[in-house]
Image 1 (cartoon, helix red, strand yellow):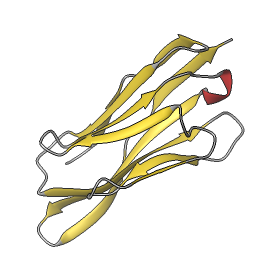
Image 2 (spheres, helix red, strand yellow):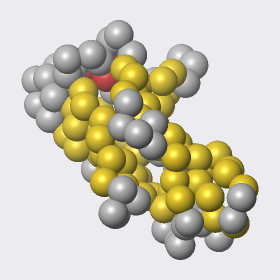
Image 3 (cartoon, rainbow, N blue to C red):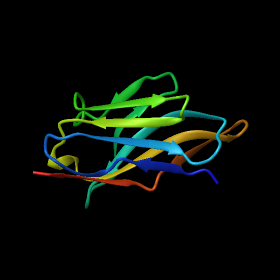
Image 4 (cartoon, rainbow, N blue to C red):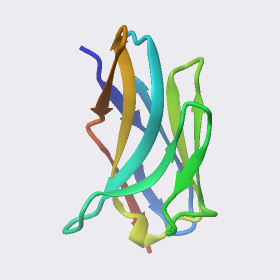
Length: 120
């Protein structure tokens, strides 16, 4: 069964950087839109950034100019480069992607989440 595997979370001081990665664990035929969401304690899950199969990107206002989403189609991987991190960026970050595992069927998958903690 295909799963989305995230990596790169951790503890960093304010002003620091982290890069998150996400890739499917099994064989896929194609992946379309991919994105990153986050959920802080006591708050709703929110979109951080997403990227289409053509490479068009979209960012939450709170991360514009600091975060960059990118994808490597050859590696079926999406990245989130996070710079100038702030304590308010602390959250569990989730990867999501529309994957084609069976020909003709696109299914939305979610990763298990990776913790990002920014200390002040």
